Image (cartoon, rainbow, N blue to C red):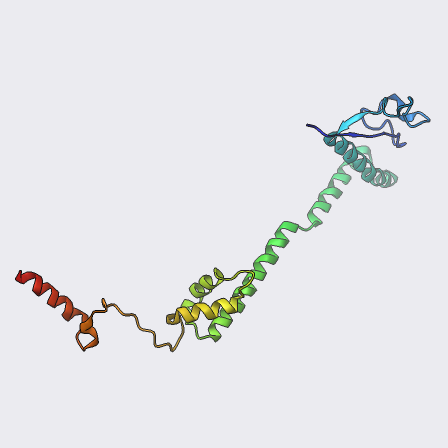
Length: 198
């Protein structure tokens, strides 16, 4: 379903105006000839109304420049070239807002990363593990949990990443011989020997 706008067009004094104005744009009653008031007005889609508005803006921007350049003794072709060059220069001078936003976001992320790594270094995290630990902790951060709280929890659960921790990795199966001075290899060897005797 298309939305339509009802526009009443007036002669703007700059010429014949846009197409579709019809002959009643210059009427003394503004184009409302009948009692209903809408019978003689043109109906335009949003795209057509936008096109008309853009054309008028273009004329409004062009008229003073054209007048100025003609006063300087320039021909119609030179005026057109000068206006095109002026508009091109305007486009070059406009900042790229999207790029600026992206640069700002990247800079904020870098600062946050440096602060987080400094905090983790202060907690004794080894330099070679900073990136990994920071990544894992950042996954734990949400609206209720700050990076610092998440770091405390993660480092408490994973002390192997902290310098000076007495964390050891056990590779044994944890059988009863290990506690009484026997080694894991001895228990495995005993199991193999027992299986061979059968």
